[in-house]
Image (tube, rainbow, N blue to C red; front, side):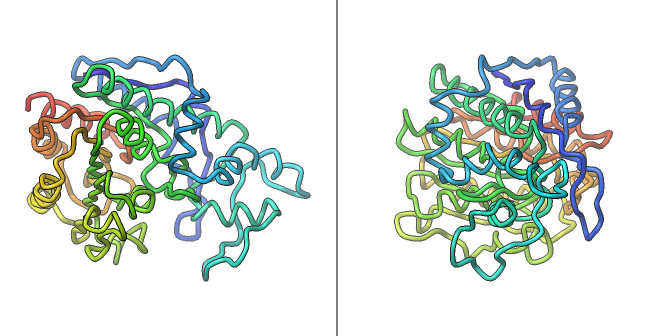
Length: 344
């Protein structure tokens, strides 16, 4: 297995986010990467840094999954925000077009509300560089599969699966799983994305919802009761050429390993008829019972079984790190998953 992490990801270090009306310390920071790297060391693995965190090729690929105005917003908003009177030292919206905006605003405050879907995505002075480094890490992992097959793991933070074509949300800015799929599609005809994060991969779903060449499946806590709330029901199956190429398996909040594995089996069975040439696994570890955002009830040992279940699929696979937030169990959860995956 090839493993990748660009250290410039540390440049995105959001100090806080708004949760249930309170400003609290953000769990999505450099400490996550440290704990995940410790999990890799636990199973005798170490990370390799991609050669660069920005390149014309990366920018070109990002334009295939995100709008140009959104990419421009991420790159320029901090400087434009800081010249506003009495502006904070991080970008955070105070208005959103909840009913559906009629036109795209010129003002930085309006643009922040348009593109930052929730209050979990503050942007600081160095955030864009860290966000690009996360995407470059996903790109490098996917390129390694194109070059030599096998399996690769990308330690990506910030994560990406809530980032849609024109928006950030849930700590996510650029959709790393979608980027990996884009790289793979350059050499194979059909790619599947299988998302096993605690939360629905709504951004990934939106990017591919009307496409038939990338199958998307997500197992997650029921959005009727859990973030992201507005996407992720079983009725969302795609449109146009993508009809039937999207599957959601929502689980009741508090579900454990039996329901989780049954849900994975449901995704695998549906994906089998698609016959993907390569697979992207959006790997969340936040289904653990002690995760700060906990909504499911997995134990550390359960990740061994999940890793084995996914490792048995036998296709070239890119593992993209999504959720999983600082707890004493986080390192062990990743180690457990990789033990199961590699055993398979």
